[in-house]
Length: 304
Length: 330
Image 1 (tube, each protein chain N blue to C red):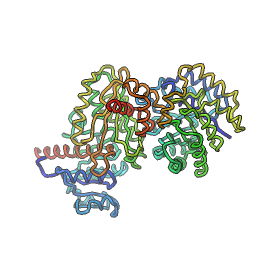
Image 2 (cartoon, rainbow over the protein chains, first blue to last red):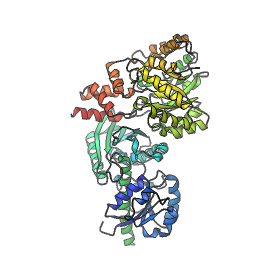
Image 3 (cartoon, rainbow over the protein chains, first blue to last red):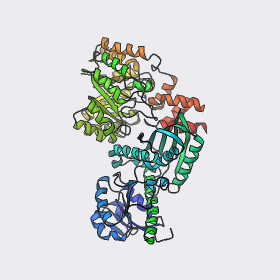
Image 4 (cartoon, each protein chain N blue to C red):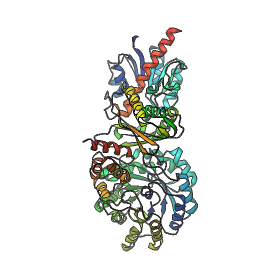
Protein backbone atom coordinates (compact mmCIF):
# COMPACT_ATOMS: atom_id res chain seq x y z
CA UNK A 1 0.00 0.00 0.00
CA UNK A 2 1.57 3.30 -1.06
CA UNK A 3 -0.48 5.36 1.46
CA UNK A 4 0.05 5.97 5.14
CA UNK A 5 -0.44 2.93 7.30
CA UNK A 6 -4.02 2.08 8.28
CA UNK A 7 -4.70 3.30 11.80
CA UNK A 8 -6.53 0.70 13.86
CA UNK A 9 -7.53 -0.24 17.39
CA UNK A 10 -7.84 -3.70 18.89
CA UNK A 11 -10.53 -4.46 21.46
CA UNK A 12 -9.73 -7.41 23.72
CA UNK A 13 -6.47 -8.39 25.41
CA UNK A 14 -6.85 -12.17 25.40
CA UNK A 15 -4.93 -14.60 23.18
CA UNK A 16 -6.59 -13.39 20.00
CA UNK A 17 -6.14 -9.71 20.78
CA UNK A 18 -2.46 -10.13 21.70
CA UNK A 19 -1.73 -12.22 18.60
CA UNK A 20 -3.47 -9.60 16.45
CA UNK A 21 -1.37 -6.79 17.92
CA UNK A 22 1.87 -8.71 17.42
CA UNK A 23 0.87 -9.35 13.84
CA UNK A 24 -0.23 -5.78 13.12
CA UNK A 25 2.87 -4.26 14.74
CA UNK A 26 5.06 -6.24 12.34
CA UNK A 27 2.98 -5.22 9.33
CA UNK A 28 4.07 -1.94 7.68
CA UNK A 29 0.55 -1.45 6.29
CA UNK A 30 -0.85 -0.89 9.79
CA UNK A 31 -0.39 1.36 12.75
CA UNK A 32 -1.86 0.08 16.02
CA UNK A 33 -3.08 3.23 17.75
CA UNK A 34 -4.89 1.65 20.69
CA UNK A 35 -5.32 -1.60 22.54
CA UNK A 36 -8.42 -1.66 24.71
CA UNK A 37 -8.94 -3.94 27.68
CA UNK A 38 -10.85 -3.85 30.91
CA UNK A 39 -8.21 -4.31 33.57
CA UNK A 40 -5.13 -2.13 34.00
CA UNK A 41 -3.14 -5.09 35.29
CA UNK A 42 -4.07 -7.32 32.33
CA UNK A 43 -0.89 -9.01 31.04
CA UNK A 44 -2.14 -8.43 27.50
CA UNK A 45 -2.01 -4.65 28.01
CA UNK A 46 1.31 -4.61 29.86
CA UNK A 47 2.97 -6.63 27.15
CA UNK A 48 2.59 -3.67 24.77
CA UNK A 49 3.92 -0.88 27.00
CA UNK A 50 6.03 1.46 24.82
CA UNK A 51 4.88 -0.36 21.70
CA UNK A 52 1.27 0.81 21.34
CA UNK A 53 0.62 4.51 22.10
CA UNK A 54 -2.75 4.12 23.81
CA UNK A 55 -3.22 1.25 26.23
CA UNK A 56 -6.72 1.73 27.61
CA UNK A 57 -8.13 -0.30 30.47
CA UNK A 58 -11.57 1.31 30.61
CA UNK A 59 -13.21 -0.70 27.86
CA UNK A 60 -15.12 0.76 24.92
CA UNK A 61 -16.27 3.73 27.06
CA UNK A 62 -12.72 4.98 27.38
CA UNK A 63 -12.03 4.34 23.72
CA UNK A 64 -15.03 6.12 22.15
CA UNK A 65 -13.90 9.68 22.96
CA UNK A 66 -10.64 9.04 21.05
CA UNK A 67 -12.01 6.68 18.42
CA UNK A 68 -11.68 9.22 15.62
CA UNK A 69 -7.93 8.63 15.72
CA UNK A 70 -8.47 5.28 13.99
CA UNK A 71 -10.09 4.14 10.75
CA UNK A 72 -11.22 0.73 11.88
CA UNK A 73 -11.43 -1.61 14.83
CA UNK A 74 -10.74 -5.31 15.42
CA UNK A 75 -13.11 -6.73 18.01
CA UNK A 76 -11.62 -9.73 19.81
CA UNK A 77 -13.85 -9.61 22.88
CA UNK A 78 -16.96 -11.78 23.01
CA UNK A 79 -20.09 -12.30 20.94
CA UNK A 80 -22.13 -10.74 23.74
CA UNK A 81 -20.02 -7.56 23.89
CA UNK A 82 -19.64 -7.27 20.14
CA UNK A 83 -23.21 -6.16 19.57
CA UNK A 84 -22.78 -3.28 22.03
CA UNK A 85 -19.41 -2.33 20.55
CA UNK A 86 -20.71 -2.36 17.01
CA UNK A 87 -23.71 -0.18 17.86
CA UNK A 88 -21.35 2.47 19.21
CA UNK A 89 -18.59 2.18 16.60
CA UNK A 90 -20.95 2.28 13.67
CA UNK A 91 -22.25 5.68 14.81
CA UNK A 92 -18.71 6.93 14.61
CA UNK A 93 -18.39 5.58 11.08
CA UNK A 94 -15.70 3.03 11.88
CA UNK A 95 -15.44 -0.26 10.01
CA UNK A 96 -15.18 -3.30 12.24
CA UNK A 97 -13.59 -6.71 11.85
CA UNK A 98 -15.41 -9.07 14.20
CA UNK A 99 -13.42 -12.02 15.53
CA UNK A 100 -16.16 -13.14 17.89
CA UNK A 101 -18.76 -15.71 16.80
CA UNK A 102 -21.55 -13.10 17.01
CA UNK A 103 -22.48 -13.27 13.32
CA UNK A 104 -23.65 -9.65 13.52
CA UNK A 105 -21.73 -8.65 10.40
CA UNK A 106 -21.42 -10.27 6.98
CA UNK A 107 -19.38 -13.45 6.74
CA UNK A 108 -16.00 -12.76 5.13
CA UNK A 109 -13.53 -15.30 3.84
CA UNK A 110 -10.81 -13.21 2.19
CA UNK A 111 -9.74 -16.16 0.04
CA UNK A 112 -13.06 -15.73 -1.73
CA UNK A 113 -13.16 -11.95 -1.91
CA UNK A 114 -13.94 -11.06 -5.48
CA UNK A 115 -14.87 -14.64 -6.32
CA UNK A 116 -18.25 -14.51 -4.59
CA UNK A 117 -20.37 -11.42 -5.01
CA UNK A 118 -21.42 -11.15 -1.34
CA UNK A 119 -17.80 -11.36 -0.28
CA UNK A 120 -16.48 -8.34 -2.09
CA UNK A 121 -14.68 -5.89 0.09
CA UNK A 122 -15.44 -2.82 -2.04
CA UNK A 123 -18.76 -0.97 -2.52
CA UNK A 124 -20.23 -2.04 0.77
CA UNK A 125 -22.72 -0.23 2.97
CA UNK A 126 -20.57 2.01 5.16
CA UNK A 127 -19.28 1.41 7.67
CA UNK A 128 -18.74 -2.30 7.09
CA UNK A 129 -18.85 -5.06 9.71
CA UNK A 130 -17.05 -8.23 8.65
CA UNK A 131 -17.58 -11.44 10.60
CA UNK A 132 -14.59 -13.75 10.36
CA UNK A 133 -16.85 -16.81 10.93
CA UNK A 134 -14.86 -19.74 12.37
CA UNK A 135 -11.47 -21.38 11.96
CA UNK A 136 -13.19 -24.32 10.28
CA UNK A 137 -14.99 -21.87 7.99
CA UNK A 138 -11.78 -20.01 7.07
CA UNK A 139 -9.87 -23.22 6.40
CA UNK A 140 -12.64 -24.99 4.44
CA UNK A 141 -14.61 -22.34 2.57
CA UNK A 142 -12.01 -21.80 -0.16
CA UNK A 143 -11.71 -25.51 -0.90
CA UNK A 144 -15.47 -26.00 -0.75
CA UNK A 145 -15.94 -23.11 -3.18
CA UNK A 146 -13.25 -24.43 -5.54
CA UNK A 147 -14.94 -27.82 -5.61
CA UNK A 148 -18.40 -26.32 -6.07
CA UNK A 149 -17.16 -24.52 -9.22
CA UNK A 150 -15.97 -27.81 -10.70
CA UNK A 151 -18.72 -30.27 -9.75
CA UNK A 152 -22.27 -30.66 -10.96
CA UNK A 153 -25.39 -30.99 -8.84
CA UNK A 154 -23.81 -30.95 -5.43
CA UNK A 155 -26.02 -32.80 -2.96
CA UNK A 156 -24.05 -32.38 0.27
CA UNK A 157 -20.95 -30.72 1.67
CA UNK A 158 -19.27 -31.79 4.89
CA UNK A 159 -16.45 -30.06 6.74
CA UNK A 160 -14.67 -31.79 9.59
CA UNK A 161 -11.81 -30.19 11.48
CA UNK A 162 -9.51 -31.45 14.17
CA UNK A 163 -7.63 -28.95 16.29
CA UNK A 164 -5.19 -29.14 19.18
CA UNK A 165 -7.11 -29.20 22.45
CA UNK A 166 -4.62 -26.67 23.86
CA UNK A 167 -5.64 -24.16 21.22
CA UNK A 168 -9.33 -24.26 22.19
CA UNK A 169 -9.96 -21.85 25.05
CA UNK A 170 -13.01 -21.70 27.32
CA UNK A 171 -14.99 -19.57 24.84
CA UNK A 172 -14.47 -22.00 21.95
CA UNK A 173 -15.45 -24.92 24.16
CA UNK A 174 -18.58 -23.24 25.46
CA UNK A 175 -19.57 -22.21 21.93
CA UNK A 176 -19.05 -25.50 20.09
CA UNK A 177 -22.67 -25.57 18.90
CA UNK A 178 -22.39 -22.01 17.58
CA UNK A 179 -19.15 -23.02 15.87
CA UNK A 180 -21.01 -25.80 14.06
CA UNK A 181 -23.93 -23.58 13.05
CA UNK A 182 -21.72 -20.74 11.82
CA UNK A 183 -19.45 -23.06 9.86
CA UNK A 184 -22.39 -24.83 8.25
CA UNK A 185 -23.94 -21.53 7.26
CA UNK A 186 -20.81 -20.10 5.60
CA UNK A 187 -20.22 -23.36 3.71
CA UNK A 188 -23.81 -23.27 2.44
CA UNK A 189 -23.26 -19.67 1.40
CA UNK A 190 -20.09 -20.28 -0.62
CA UNK A 191 -21.16 -23.53 -2.28
CA UNK A 192 -24.84 -22.75 -2.82
CA UNK A 193 -25.61 -26.19 -1.39
CA UNK A 194 -28.08 -25.98 1.50
CA UNK A 195 -27.19 -29.42 2.90
CA UNK A 196 -24.01 -28.91 4.92
CA UNK A 197 -22.52 -30.56 7.96
CA UNK A 198 -19.69 -29.36 10.20
CA UNK A 199 -17.82 -31.52 12.71
CA UNK A 200 -15.20 -30.40 15.23
CA UNK A 201 -12.84 -32.72 17.09
CA UNK A 202 -10.38 -31.64 19.78
CA UNK A 203 -7.20 -33.67 20.04
CA UNK A 204 -5.17 -33.38 23.26
CA UNK A 205 -2.05 -35.13 21.91
CA UNK A 206 1.30 -33.88 23.15
CA UNK A 207 3.13 -32.54 21.18
CA UNK A 208 0.00 -30.78 19.95
CA UNK A 209 -1.40 -31.61 16.54
CA UNK A 210 -1.61 -29.16 13.67
CA UNK A 211 -5.11 -28.21 12.58
CA UNK A 212 -6.61 -30.25 9.78
CA UNK A 213 -9.79 -29.66 7.86
CA UNK A 214 -11.38 -32.15 5.50
CA UNK A 215 -13.96 -31.08 2.95
CA UNK A 216 -16.11 -33.87 1.54
CA UNK A 217 -18.58 -33.30 -1.29
CA UNK A 218 -21.20 -35.49 -2.85
CA UNK A 219 -21.96 -34.52 -6.42
CA UNK A 220 -23.18 -36.02 -9.66
CA UNK A 221 -20.18 -35.26 -11.82
CA UNK A 222 -16.74 -33.90 -11.12
CA UNK A 223 -13.25 -33.91 -12.51
CA UNK A 224 -10.65 -34.74 -9.87
CA UNK A 225 -7.80 -33.26 -11.90
CA UNK A 226 -9.40 -29.86 -12.25
CA UNK A 227 -10.54 -29.92 -8.60
CA UNK A 228 -6.99 -30.65 -7.49
CA UNK A 229 -5.81 -27.64 -9.49
CA UNK A 230 -8.58 -25.44 -8.12
CA UNK A 231 -7.76 -26.40 -4.55
CA UNK A 232 -4.06 -25.68 -5.09
CA UNK A 233 -4.96 -22.25 -6.52
CA UNK A 234 -7.01 -21.39 -3.46
CA UNK A 235 -4.33 -22.80 -1.14
CA UNK A 236 -1.67 -20.63 -2.72
CA UNK A 237 -3.95 -17.57 -2.38
CA UNK A 238 -4.45 -18.34 1.32
CA UNK A 239 -0.70 -18.86 1.78
CA UNK A 240 -0.24 -15.12 1.12
CA UNK A 241 -1.51 -14.53 4.65
CA UNK A 242 -1.23 -18.01 6.19
CA UNK A 243 2.14 -19.34 4.98
CA UNK A 244 1.53 -22.68 6.69
CA UNK A 245 -1.66 -23.55 4.79
CA UNK A 246 -1.26 -26.61 2.57
CA UNK A 247 -3.30 -29.37 0.98
CA UNK A 248 -2.17 -32.49 2.85
CA UNK A 249 -4.44 -35.04 1.15
CA UNK A 250 -5.29 -34.04 -2.42
CA UNK A 251 -8.74 -34.60 -3.94
CA UNK A 252 -9.64 -38.27 -4.13
CA UNK A 253 -12.83 -40.23 -4.52
CA UNK A 254 -13.80 -41.87 -1.21
CA UNK A 255 -16.79 -43.68 -2.64
CA UNK A 256 -18.82 -43.41 -5.79
CA UNK A 257 -19.76 -39.75 -6.29
CA UNK A 258 -18.08 -38.59 -3.09
CA UNK A 259 -14.79 -36.71 -3.08
CA UNK A 260 -12.65 -35.44 -0.27
CA UNK A 261 -9.74 -33.00 0.23
CA UNK A 262 -7.78 -32.31 3.42
CA UNK A 263 -5.86 -29.16 4.31
CA UNK A 264 -3.34 -28.76 7.09
CA UNK A 265 -2.87 -25.43 8.83
CA UNK A 266 0.42 -24.66 10.56
CA UNK A 267 0.29 -21.37 12.44
CA UNK A 268 2.84 -18.60 11.83
CA UNK A 269 3.84 -18.52 15.48
CA UNK A 270 3.67 -14.73 16.02
CA UNK A 271 2.46 -15.04 19.58
CA UNK A 272 0.46 -18.24 19.60
CA UNK A 273 2.41 -21.42 18.91
CA UNK A 274 2.37 -23.07 15.46
CA UNK A 275 -0.19 -25.67 16.55
CA UNK A 276 -2.72 -22.89 17.00
CA UNK A 277 -3.31 -22.77 13.25
CA UNK A 278 -7.02 -22.44 13.97
CA UNK A 279 -6.48 -19.10 15.69
CA UNK A 280 -3.81 -18.09 13.22
CA UNK A 281 -6.02 -18.55 10.18
CA UNK A 282 -8.78 -16.38 11.66
CA UNK A 283 -6.40 -13.62 12.72
CA UNK A 284 -4.55 -13.66 9.43
CA UNK A 285 -7.86 -13.51 7.55
CA UNK A 286 -8.93 -10.59 9.74
CA UNK A 287 -5.77 -8.62 8.97
CA UNK A 288 -6.05 -9.37 5.26
CA UNK A 289 -9.68 -8.24 5.24
CA UNK A 290 -8.77 -5.01 7.02
CA UNK A 291 -5.94 -4.34 4.58
CA UNK A 292 -8.05 -4.72 1.45
CA UNK A 293 -11.13 -3.06 2.84
CA UNK A 294 -9.22 -0.05 4.19
CA UNK A 295 -7.57 0.50 0.84
CA UNK A 296 -10.91 0.25 -0.97
CA UNK A 297 -12.56 2.63 1.49
CA UNK A 298 -9.75 5.15 1.12
CA UNK A 299 -9.79 5.15 -2.67
CA UNK A 300 -13.57 5.48 -2.56
CA UNK A 301 -13.44 8.56 -0.37
CA UNK A 302 -10.63 9.95 -2.55
CA UNK A 303 -12.93 9.71 -5.60
CA UNK A 304 -15.92 11.28 -3.85
CA UNK B 1 -29.57 -52.38 41.94
CA UNK B 2 -27.22 -52.87 39.03
CA UNK B 3 -28.40 -51.47 35.69
CA UNK B 4 -27.60 -53.39 32.53
CA UNK B 5 -27.34 -50.92 29.70
CA UNK B 6 -27.80 -52.38 26.24
CA UNK B 7 -25.75 -50.67 23.51
CA UNK B 8 -26.50 -53.23 20.76
CA UNK B 9 -28.55 -50.79 18.69
CA UNK B 10 -25.95 -48.01 18.94
CA UNK B 11 -22.41 -49.40 19.25
CA UNK B 12 -23.61 -52.39 17.20
CA UNK B 13 -24.36 -49.95 14.41
CA UNK B 14 -20.58 -49.59 13.91
CA UNK B 15 -20.43 -53.31 13.11
CA UNK B 16 -23.35 -52.83 10.70
CA UNK B 17 -21.61 -49.84 9.12
CA UNK B 18 -24.56 -47.78 10.38
CA UNK B 19 -27.04 -49.85 8.40
CA UNK B 20 -29.49 -50.46 11.26
CA UNK B 21 -33.16 -50.38 10.21
CA UNK B 22 -36.23 -49.31 12.16
CA UNK B 23 -37.75 -52.75 11.50
CA UNK B 24 -34.96 -54.41 13.43
CA UNK B 25 -35.10 -51.72 16.14
CA UNK B 26 -38.79 -52.52 16.61
CA UNK B 27 -38.22 -56.28 16.73
CA UNK B 28 -35.28 -55.97 19.11
CA UNK B 29 -36.99 -53.48 21.41
CA UNK B 30 -40.03 -55.70 21.82
CA UNK B 31 -37.69 -58.47 23.05
CA UNK B 32 -35.74 -56.00 25.20
CA UNK B 33 -38.96 -54.86 26.78
CA UNK B 34 -39.26 -58.33 28.35
CA UNK B 35 -35.55 -58.80 29.06
CA UNK B 36 -34.94 -56.93 32.28
CA UNK B 37 -32.24 -54.67 30.81
CA UNK B 38 -32.44 -51.15 32.22
CA UNK B 39 -32.04 -49.16 28.99
CA UNK B 40 -31.63 -49.63 25.27
CA UNK B 41 -29.41 -47.15 23.45
CA UNK B 42 -30.31 -46.48 19.83
CA UNK B 43 -28.68 -44.63 16.96
CA UNK B 44 -25.67 -44.10 14.74
CA UNK B 45 -22.44 -45.62 16.08
CA UNK B 46 -21.09 -42.19 17.07
CA UNK B 47 -24.51 -41.11 18.34
CA UNK B 48 -26.92 -38.33 17.45
CA UNK B 49 -26.00 -36.13 14.53
CA UNK B 50 -23.00 -38.29 13.62
CA UNK B 51 -24.24 -39.66 10.31
CA UNK B 52 -21.53 -38.26 8.05
CA UNK B 53 -19.10 -39.03 5.29
CA UNK B 54 -16.39 -38.90 7.95
CA UNK B 55 -17.72 -41.71 10.16
CA UNK B 56 -20.31 -43.30 7.90
CA UNK B 57 -23.79 -42.40 6.73
CA UNK B 58 -26.77 -43.89 8.53
CA UNK B 59 -29.08 -45.95 6.40
CA UNK B 60 -32.01 -44.57 8.41
CA UNK B 61 -31.89 -41.24 10.20
CA UNK B 62 -31.84 -40.71 13.98
CA UNK B 63 -35.50 -39.72 14.16
CA UNK B 64 -36.77 -42.79 12.36
CA UNK B 65 -34.72 -45.20 14.52
CA UNK B 66 -35.65 -43.43 17.74
CA UNK B 67 -39.31 -43.29 16.85
CA UNK B 68 -39.38 -47.03 16.21
CA UNK B 69 -37.82 -47.62 19.62
CA UNK B 70 -40.06 -45.11 21.37
CA UNK B 71 -43.17 -46.80 20.00
CA UNK B 72 -41.99 -50.16 21.30
CA UNK B 73 -40.43 -49.44 24.70
CA UNK B 74 -42.47 -48.68 27.82
CA UNK B 75 -40.72 -50.25 30.82
CA UNK B 76 -37.21 -50.16 29.43
CA UNK B 77 -35.65 -46.74 29.05
CA UNK B 78 -34.78 -45.31 25.66
CA UNK B 79 -31.26 -43.89 25.59
CA UNK B 80 -29.05 -41.98 23.16
CA UNK B 81 -25.35 -41.21 22.84
CA UNK B 82 -24.30 -37.71 21.74
CA UNK B 83 -20.83 -36.25 21.18
CA UNK B 84 -20.53 -32.42 21.23
CA UNK B 85 -18.76 -31.51 18.01
CA UNK B 86 -21.06 -33.88 16.14
CA UNK B 87 -24.40 -33.28 17.90
CA UNK B 88 -25.74 -29.85 18.82
CA UNK B 89 -28.40 -28.94 21.37
CA UNK B 90 -30.70 -27.31 18.85
CA UNK B 91 -30.41 -29.74 15.98
CA UNK B 92 -30.17 -33.03 17.89
CA UNK B 93 -30.89 -32.88 21.62
CA UNK B 94 -34.09 -30.83 21.46
CA UNK B 95 -35.78 -33.15 18.93
CA UNK B 96 -34.67 -36.19 20.95
CA UNK B 97 -36.18 -34.68 24.10
CA UNK B 98 -39.40 -33.98 22.24
CA UNK B 99 -39.47 -37.51 20.93
CA UNK B 100 -39.35 -38.79 24.49
CA UNK B 101 -35.79 -40.09 24.95
CA UNK B 102 -35.30 -40.97 28.66
CA UNK B 103 -31.53 -41.17 29.09
CA UNK B 104 -28.94 -38.96 27.42
CA UNK B 105 -25.29 -39.85 27.35
CA UNK B 106 -23.10 -36.87 26.54
CA UNK B 107 -19.66 -38.07 25.54
CA UNK B 108 -16.29 -36.41 25.06
CA UNK B 109 -12.73 -37.55 24.72
CA UNK B 110 -11.40 -38.37 28.19
CA UNK B 111 -9.58 -35.06 28.63
CA UNK B 112 -12.19 -32.75 27.06
CA UNK B 113 -15.15 -32.89 29.45
CA UNK B 114 -15.62 -29.11 29.32
CA UNK B 115 -17.03 -29.58 25.81
CA UNK B 116 -20.04 -31.34 27.36
CA UNK B 117 -20.83 -28.75 30.00
CA UNK B 118 -23.52 -26.81 28.14
CA UNK B 119 -25.19 -29.93 26.76
CA UNK B 120 -25.35 -31.62 30.16
CA UNK B 121 -26.62 -28.48 31.86
CA UNK B 122 -29.28 -28.03 29.21
CA UNK B 123 -30.59 -31.58 29.69
CA UNK B 124 -30.31 -31.59 33.48
CA UNK B 125 -32.35 -28.38 33.65
CA UNK B 126 -35.06 -30.22 31.76
CA UNK B 127 -34.99 -33.13 34.21
CA UNK B 128 -33.66 -35.66 31.71
CA UNK B 129 -31.45 -38.42 33.10
CA UNK B 130 -27.93 -37.52 31.98
CA UNK B 131 -24.82 -39.66 31.94
CA UNK B 132 -21.49 -38.01 31.28
CA UNK B 133 -19.21 -40.23 29.23
CA UNK B 134 -15.41 -40.19 29.02
CA UNK B 135 -14.38 -41.93 25.81
CA UNK B 136 -10.93 -43.43 25.22
CA UNK B 137 -10.51 -43.41 28.98
CA UNK B 138 -7.25 -45.37 28.82
CA UNK B 139 -5.52 -42.22 27.54
CA UNK B 140 -5.57 -40.41 30.90
CA UNK B 141 -4.12 -41.35 34.25
CA UNK B 142 -6.40 -41.76 37.25
CA UNK B 143 -6.04 -38.26 38.77
CA UNK B 144 -6.83 -36.67 35.41
CA UNK B 145 -9.77 -39.02 34.97
CA UNK B 146 -11.20 -38.04 38.34
CA UNK B 147 -10.78 -34.37 37.55
CA UNK B 148 -12.64 -34.71 34.24
CA UNK B 149 -15.37 -36.80 35.85
CA UNK B 150 -15.80 -33.99 38.36
CA UNK B 151 -16.54 -31.56 35.51
CA UNK B 152 -19.29 -33.88 34.25
CA UNK B 153 -20.73 -34.23 37.72
CA UNK B 154 -20.77 -30.50 38.43
CA UNK B 155 -22.49 -29.92 35.08
CA UNK B 156 -25.33 -32.19 36.18
CA UNK B 157 -24.51 -35.76 35.15
CA UNK B 158 -25.90 -38.35 37.57
CA UNK B 159 -23.56 -41.06 36.33
CA UNK B 160 -20.08 -40.95 34.88
CA UNK B 161 -19.43 -43.68 32.33
CA UNK B 162 -15.90 -44.77 31.48
CA UNK B 163 -15.57 -46.06 27.97
CA UNK B 164 -12.70 -48.31 27.07
CA UNK B 165 -13.21 -47.29 23.45
CA UNK B 166 -10.00 -48.93 22.32
CA UNK B 167 -10.43 -52.15 24.30
CA UNK B 168 -7.04 -51.47 25.88
CA UNK B 169 -7.77 -52.09 29.57
CA UNK B 170 -6.93 -55.23 31.49
CA UNK B 171 -9.19 -56.06 34.45
CA UNK B 172 -6.87 -54.47 37.04
CA UNK B 173 -7.07 -51.12 35.19
CA UNK B 174 -10.85 -51.26 35.37
CA UNK B 175 -10.89 -52.04 39.08
CA UNK B 176 -8.53 -49.16 39.96
CA UNK B 177 -10.49 -46.66 37.93
CA UNK B 178 -13.94 -47.63 39.12
CA UNK B 179 -12.77 -47.53 42.74
CA UNK B 180 -11.06 -44.17 42.28
CA UNK B 181 -14.15 -42.60 40.76
CA UNK B 182 -16.49 -44.01 43.39
CA UNK B 183 -14.31 -42.86 46.26
CA UNK B 184 -13.72 -39.35 45.04
CA UNK B 185 -16.92 -38.43 43.25
CA UNK B 186 -20.11 -39.45 44.94
CA UNK B 187 -21.81 -40.15 41.62
CA UNK B 188 -22.73 -43.45 40.10
CA UNK B 189 -20.15 -45.00 37.81
CA UNK B 190 -20.76 -46.83 34.57
CA UNK B 191 -18.40 -48.95 32.49
CA UNK B 192 -18.37 -49.69 28.77
CA UNK B 193 -15.99 -52.37 27.54
CA UNK B 194 -14.56 -53.32 24.16
CA UNK B 195 -13.28 -56.78 23.54
CA UNK B 196 -10.12 -56.14 21.52
CA UNK B 197 -7.91 -58.08 23.90
CA UNK B 198 -10.58 -60.69 24.67
CA UNK B 199 -11.39 -59.44 28.17
CA UNK B 200 -14.52 -57.40 27.44
CA UNK B 201 -16.82 -59.54 29.59
CA UNK B 202 -14.26 -59.86 32.35
CA UNK B 203 -13.70 -56.09 32.43
CA UNK B 204 -17.46 -55.42 32.60
CA UNK B 205 -17.90 -57.91 35.42
CA UNK B 206 -14.87 -56.52 37.26
CA UNK B 207 -16.45 -53.05 37.09
CA UNK B 208 -19.68 -54.43 38.56
CA UNK B 209 -17.85 -56.25 41.35
CA UNK B 210 -16.16 -52.99 42.30
CA UNK B 211 -19.34 -51.03 42.56
CA UNK B 212 -20.06 -49.67 39.10
CA UNK B 213 -23.81 -49.18 38.90
CA UNK B 214 -24.27 -49.17 35.12
CA UNK B 215 -22.76 -51.94 33.03
CA UNK B 216 -22.80 -51.74 29.25
CA UNK B 217 -23.10 -54.75 27.02
CA UNK B 218 -24.25 -55.71 23.55
CA UNK B 219 -26.07 -58.83 22.43
CA UNK B 220 -23.56 -61.13 20.72
CA UNK B 221 -21.06 -58.36 21.54
CA UNK B 222 -22.30 -56.45 18.47
CA UNK B 223 -20.17 -53.30 18.53
CA UNK B 224 -17.20 -51.45 17.04
CA UNK B 225 -13.98 -53.34 16.33
CA UNK B 226 -14.04 -56.66 18.09
CA UNK B 227 -17.28 -55.68 19.76
CA UNK B 228 -18.45 -54.86 23.27
CA UNK B 229 -18.81 -57.03 26.35
CA UNK B 230 -21.22 -59.75 25.28
CA UNK B 231 -24.40 -58.88 27.16
CA UNK B 232 -25.68 -62.39 27.78
CA UNK B 233 -22.28 -63.51 29.12
CA UNK B 234 -22.09 -60.47 31.40
CA UNK B 235 -25.52 -61.34 32.77
CA UNK B 236 -24.61 -65.01 33.29
CA UNK B 237 -21.40 -64.03 35.08
CA UNK B 238 -23.18 -61.54 37.32
CA UNK B 239 -25.54 -64.39 38.23
CA UNK B 240 -22.71 -66.76 39.08
CA UNK B 241 -21.15 -64.09 41.28
CA UNK B 242 -24.43 -63.51 43.09
CA UNK B 243 -24.69 -59.89 41.92
CA UNK B 244 -28.05 -58.42 40.91
CA UNK B 245 -28.83 -59.05 37.26
CA UNK B 246 -31.66 -59.45 34.77
CA UNK B 247 -32.82 -63.04 34.25
CA UNK B 248 -30.67 -64.91 31.74
CA UNK B 249 -33.80 -66.18 30.04
CA UNK B 250 -34.73 -62.57 29.33
CA UNK B 251 -31.52 -61.61 27.53
CA UNK B 252 -30.84 -64.80 25.57
CA UNK B 253 -33.58 -64.00 23.04
CA UNK B 254 -31.73 -60.73 22.34
CA UNK B 255 -28.64 -62.72 21.54
CA UNK B 256 -30.58 -65.02 19.21
CA UNK B 257 -32.22 -62.10 17.44
CA UNK B 258 -28.84 -60.54 16.67
CA UNK B 259 -27.29 -63.84 15.68
CA UNK B 260 -30.18 -64.59 13.35
CA UNK B 261 -30.19 -61.20 11.69
CA UNK B 262 -26.50 -60.27 11.49
CA UNK B 263 -24.65 -63.57 11.25
CA UNK B 264 -22.23 -62.03 8.73
CA UNK B 265 -21.44 -58.89 10.73
CA UNK B 266 -20.76 -60.38 14.14
CA UNK B 267 -17.56 -59.01 15.65
CA UNK B 268 -14.66 -61.30 16.45
CA UNK B 269 -11.33 -60.86 18.09
CA UNK B 270 -9.02 -60.76 15.08
CA UNK B 271 -5.35 -60.01 14.56
CA UNK B 272 -6.40 -56.51 13.54
CA UNK B 273 -8.50 -55.90 16.65
CA UNK B 274 -5.73 -57.13 18.92
CA UNK B 275 -3.35 -54.75 17.15
CA UNK B 276 -5.74 -51.85 17.69
CA UNK B 277 -6.36 -52.75 21.34
CA UNK B 278 -2.65 -53.02 21.94
CA UNK B 279 -2.01 -49.68 20.19
CA UNK B 280 -4.84 -48.05 22.15
CA UNK B 281 -6.68 -46.79 19.07
CA UNK B 282 -10.45 -46.22 18.79
CA UNK B 283 -12.13 -49.52 17.83
CA UNK B 284 -14.49 -47.82 15.40
CA UNK B 285 -11.60 -47.16 12.99
CA UNK B 286 -11.27 -50.84 12.05
CA UNK B 287 -13.11 -50.71 8.68
CA UNK B 288 -11.12 -47.66 7.47
CA UNK B 289 -7.79 -49.05 8.68
CA UNK B 290 -8.33 -52.39 7.02
CA UNK B 291 -9.54 -50.80 3.75
CA UNK B 292 -6.70 -48.25 3.59
CA UNK B 293 -3.97 -50.74 4.50
CA UNK B 294 -5.15 -52.85 1.59
CA UNK B 295 -5.57 -49.91 -0.83
CA UNK B 296 -2.14 -48.41 -0.05
CA UNK B 297 -0.39 -51.77 0.21
CA UNK B 298 1.01 -51.01 3.65
CA UNK B 299 1.18 -53.06 6.82
CA UNK B 300 -2.03 -52.93 8.80
CA UNK B 301 -0.24 -53.41 12.08
CA UNK B 302 2.16 -50.55 11.30
CA UNK B 303 -0.82 -48.36 10.49
CA UNK B 304 -2.51 -49.16 13.84
CA UNK B 305 0.78 -48.59 15.66
CA UNK B 306 1.42 -45.26 13.96
CA UNK B 307 -2.13 -44.11 14.76
CA UNK B 308 -1.49 -45.04 18.38
CA UNK B 309 1.77 -43.12 18.34
CA UNK B 310 0.02 -40.02 16.97
CA UNK B 311 -2.60 -40.38 19.69
CA UNK B 312 -5.66 -40.17 17.48
CA UNK B 313 -8.96 -39.62 19.26
CA UNK B 314 -12.43 -40.63 18.08
CA UNK B 315 -13.70 -38.65 15.10
CA UNK B 316 -10.40 -38.37 13.21
CA UNK B 317 -11.19 -40.79 10.40
CA UNK B 318 -9.80 -38.37 7.84
CA UNK B 319 -6.34 -38.52 9.48
CA UNK B 320 -6.05 -42.23 8.77
CA UNK B 321 -5.56 -41.61 5.07
CA UNK B 322 -2.86 -39.00 5.72
CA UNK B 323 -1.02 -41.40 8.03
CA UNK B 324 -1.35 -44.20 5.47
CA UNK B 325 0.05 -41.81 2.83
CA UNK B 326 3.01 -40.98 5.08
CA UNK B 327 3.73 -44.65 5.74
CA UNK B 328 3.62 -45.42 2.04
CA UNK B 329 6.10 -42.63 1.31
CA UNK B 330 8.58 -43.74 3.97
